[in-house]
Each structure stands twice: as C-alpha cells, then as structure tokens.
Image 1 (cartoon, protein in one colour):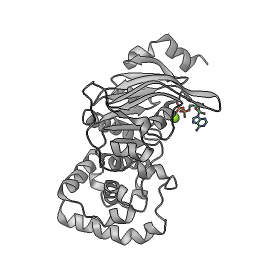
Image 2 (cartoon, protein in one colour):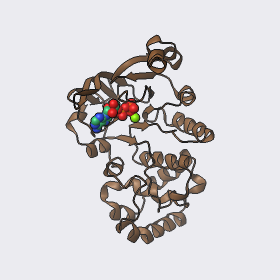
Image 3 (tube, protein in one colour):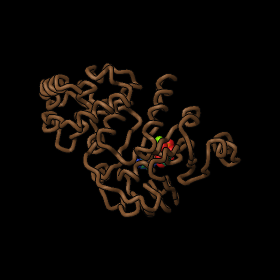
Length: 294
Ligand SMILES: Nc1ncnc2c1ncn2[C@@H]1O[C@H](COP(=O)(O)OP(=O)(O)O)[C@@H](O)[C@H]1O
Ligand SMILES: [Mg+2]
C-alpha cells in the first residue's frame, strides 16, 4: 500500500465521520451490536497442544422446553476446515450462537483450545479471544469504501471515531493490502461497499474479520444468494484460509461443500447424526432419511 493511498484513505475516512456519527452509516442489518463485537481486536495464544482448537461436549440448550441442542459433542483441529450440514432447524446456527457466547447452554462444556472455557466469557470477549463470526447477511458499512471498511475493522474496539482517525502502521497497512487480494477486491479498494455485488459484500465482511487475525472463523451459509462464479471464488478463498485459520462452515450448497470439505459433520435434532467425508455421510442411511424421508 503506498503512502498516497493511505493518506487518501485517511482523508476520506475523516470526511465521512459526520455521516457515521449521525448514524446514517448503519449496516444493512441495522448496525446490530453483534456486528461490532464480532470484530474486536487482540487475541493471545490458544493452547492447541491437545490437537483441538474447539471442543464441545454434551452441550444442550432448550427454548421453551424444546431442545434445540441436545447433548452435542464435537471438536475441530487447528487449521481444519470443518463443514457442517443438516436440515433446517437442526441447530446449526444455535451451535454458533453458543460458541460465540450469544446463547448460554443449559449444560455442557465448550472450550477454545484446551485452557479457555468459553462459557466464562461474554460475546465481545469471545470475539477478542480470536473467534470471528460471519452471519448470513453481509453487515458491511455501505457508505464507506472497501478500504475504509477494512480499516475500520482493525480498531473497532476503540470506538468508531477513534478508529477512523487512527492511522495504520506499516504492518497493518500490509495486512490490509494482503487481505484486499485474498478477498478478490484489490481492484475495488475505493468503491463504496454499498455498490458491491452481494458476493463481494460477503467477501468484504470476511476481509473485515480477517483484519482481526482470528484463529477460528465461523461462517453461516456464506454462499447463500451468490452466483455460481462467486460461489467458486468463495471456495477458492476458503481453501486459502484453511491452515492459517480454523474454519467452521455451515452450508446447504453441496457442490460447494464438495469442493472445500475434508470432514463433514451432519447435525440433526441438535446433535451429531453422522461425520466423515461427504461421500461417507451422503451414503449413510440415517442421513438420507433426514434429508429425504420426511
Ligand atoms: N432464540 C430462540 N428461541 C426459540 N427457539 C429458537 C431460538 N433459536 C433457535 N430456535 C429453534 O431452535 C431450532 C434450531 O434452530 P437453528 O439453530 O436456527 O437451526 P439451523 O440453523 O440448523 O436451521 C429451531 O427449531 C429454531 O426454531
Ligand atoms: Mg441456520
């Protein structure tokens, strides 16, 4: 990133502060609080010496007597890209709500690495520990440019104004430039996020998460509504993220899952129904039953 571009970025950011402060730059989803906590900064080390970055055991939660999550046990290895599939209502989103502290389980164990008991942390703290979450709908700042969105994601925890006035140091500028390439938006840095396609907005939001250098990324139906070409590029993107980050991806698009998956976990009625390669789970009678038998 050249100093000129950085200067331009900073100036444009200052110009838009007024608009932001009057609340006109709400995200598409109405600027919900989760959008802020999700991109908080500063993660320490996570102890993965036991070979797991995420560990759930016997987790249950009920809503009005209905068990949305029922004795769910699951773990993910560092650097793994885990795909989660399952019929509507299986509990996939609720599982992510539990991992990110949005929903408290009634019972069970949820660990990040082998030492961090996630149930002891609040939603914003969990984001700071290094767990990034992408909701279904893109939640970018439409009135800011691609560049500014990424810049803002760096320092969200300092508050909007402080973060907008903050100048990037060279390591941050390098990371921003690298992320622009990773998310296929290097040629669109100065475009307004509101003018991007749906797929590009999704990539931008992933880029915003990446600015925080999360250890674990949770992505809920990331290719829903994308064109075939956008879906293919998203698969490429996820494959480049794998290894550097651990990913949990919930998706219904089976050709997408086929392109990116190693281990696929099938959730049903709030617990794990089957797990294995996509071919293995698709051949499993119980899986066929829940997808076709009702
Ligand atoms: N906050 C909530 N209050 C009541 N019921 C909920 C709540 N969140 C989820 N549920 C219910 O829990 C079940 C699992 O939902 P969800 O996790 O969204 O499934 P999925 O993402 O797999 O489609 C559904 O029956 C849903 O209606
Ligand atoms: Mg869901």
